[in-house]
Length: 324
Image (cartoon, rainbow, N blue to C red; front, side, top):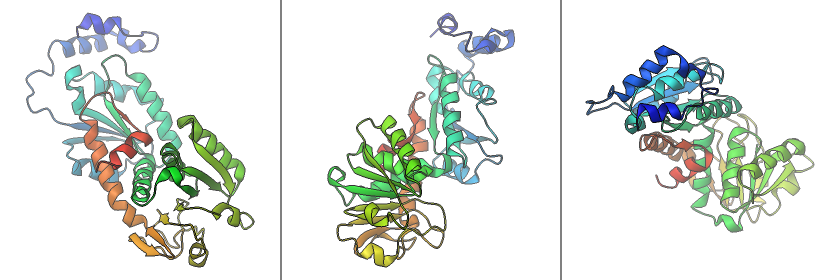
């Protein structure tokens, strides 16, 4: 790759800053060997957090995954991220860019997705780094929960119910289950919200078998009828089903509750349960799922540094969870 080839590939309407002399000089120096002679190039993870304070949790996981340096930025938005991305892609040669990566996090999943779109759109040609998005831990938690269920079920014959299915984790659990061939009921207090989530899942998984359902006092019986798998992914402190109601479900084989804050979503399941027999079903609690979630998170961070063109989102993270 030569400087001339790089410049020819730049869309100057999209990247007007490249016309500025100072930035052009930086690009030129880059291709004149600015990163040559660095035999032990450090692995740098650039943490872009949509919250004001970047997550210390995500930083610790990055260090435990073997990252050498973590550069953390808070209150990152599509409007202010471009310079940070340029700093990532113009400091090393294309062959060395696999040693730099971006992690997108924060509590607002929708904001994280918008940030991912902007970051990806800032890359061009060989000038890119790999990106992992796990806002609110939703991707790694969902991947781990569904992987736990996969150990005990054939998804192609599974009727699944995702409680709190319109939330970040529930949405992604539903998407992953649908991608694996399960028939999935997405529940919400309002069926209209569940229908919107079903439409979004079909956008990611065109042949998804997803059905919206209202989970209310009037709709509980219909929602749980005939299900083999229940994943509770609602807000902290919301209990969906009592132990007695769970035990009455004759076809239920696996029950998973990803909420550790009491009261848990599925009564009788303890946070530490891991493939425990509870209420007539194989049960997993939040901590029981959490071990695999943490392994998946670390493995995903490590995966970033194998290439400079990866985007690790829901489907990719689920694949990683199956390998750890």
